[in-house]
Length: 126
Image (cartoon, rainbow, N blue to C red; front, side, top):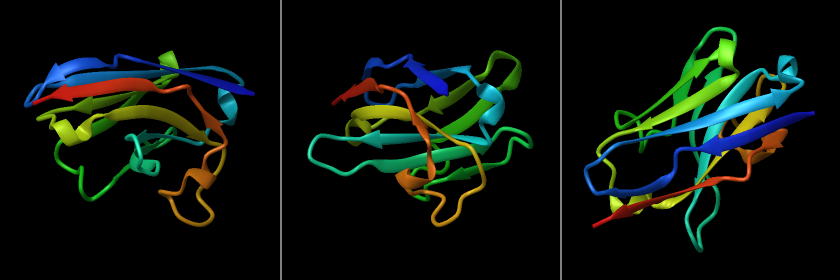
């Protein structure tokens, strides 16, 4: 089993930046890729970004490309999400997720990810 713990969320002004962290523990050797999702109140869970553990290759939601950057430190079993030029509409609970294999259907589907963290709240004030 893999445990994921997010941190770094909080309150930030519009236009500001924030860096989220996701620390993985347990059987981390089973993870193939890590991803970030977010969910605002009343909305469905939305894919943000994914990074492959071995190669560092990344994939982003089109709407967020250019503002958000995903990265990883394999030695620390940690993945990061750097968020710049934040907007009030970025307000959501941000979740870290782990896949144990390459995607079978849609890379952005929550069903592709076997493990999830509890989430960290990001609030962007206007």
